[in-house]
Length: 138
Length: 380
Image 1 (cartoon, rainbow over the protein chains, first blue to last red):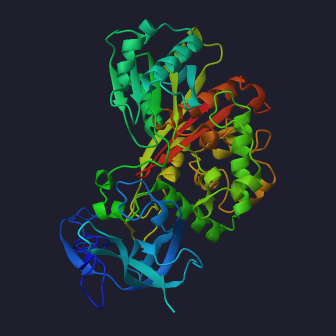
Image 2: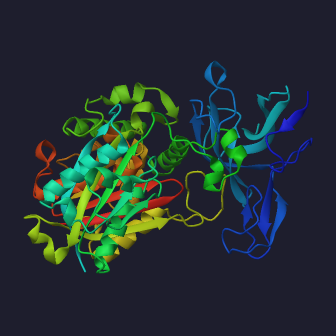
Image 3: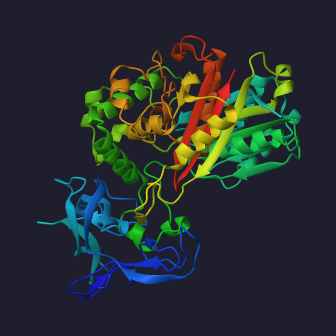
């Protein structure tokens, strides 16, 4: 079965070197994630697709130790639920993105992180649904 | 035109089986009317706040069909502050002289949930499990502790104070004191926040009767004046719940903006406030909000909490009725529960939890998704 992305247009996929897909305002330069059609700073509608840096630093984090309410959560629940880390990674002075983290312990603010694509769930057709996440570098 | 609060009423917060939200609203209204010595037919207008109840104005079926303008508001966790502000403004504008703000809700147990698209978030954000308010509060206090040297022990002390104050409040949901050890040892939900550091959605209602200040003595020997009520939403760069991304630039949150606006309108400073109600969705939120509302510098909370300054007998009494942690959060009613407590404190009617020294100025703050805050300042 195929490995499919959790949603189209969130990160480049399939790819050996995946990147998050954001947008940049042609008028004021702000970078958003994901893509949006209008600028939250200057209200311009001249937004262009912009691929984000793959590395950054952990800006804030916590853990998700209970299965989120479902819906909207679509991942494993009950005994299959595995707690995960979640945080914001600041990508090289461009934007902070909220993301799943590959681990829920030994995290500290300021540590260097890099983008990875990890399994999230198996859909009804047996496809492996994958998502972006960040893991500590090294 | 100045505005006075001349009656307050509360339906207790907690779990009440088959009692509907509308019925709880009617009970809160009757208690507020009795407190003001006002008959329902004298009420000229009303605003009602609720999340779960589409049409809280249907409470007129239980109160009396008098034909008054009755407007429903929903504004996230600042719903009750919005109902109060709109009611006060109606009087300030001279449109009416005597009116009512009421909030009521009846939530299912467990964390709030919704469709992320209704919050301008993509569907995948919810599918991945990011559309969870508790996780935001975990991240915010975890970062705040890192940046400003706050310990987990301080979070436990804040929660223990809420349960202790709740035990003194006959209307509270949680009325059993809990030790700091038990709070720290309870299930970790979103690091560093444990189960007993969080409030729960629950049920309840609260109402206040407002009038033109120059007529207040017709209704109350101890009118409480609403000196300011301000609402703000997030600006770009604030660290807010349900944000798939944040810009590099950082700015203060809506609580800071609402607080400054309210203090400016009231001509009162944080140093003048004698009793404080803060949005304590979790113990960390109370710690952060103490600074965001101007009552201390970032990081001072560690010492203030250790020294007992946030206790009923302390210099900055916070959440004297147990706050959200002991009362739970029926969203539509929560902010009017805060006002109810401040009014009792300023009248000297708070019984076992009365702040000593005749408090003269009170303060309330709400904060919630998707980045909205409401602040009110009241005085004798």
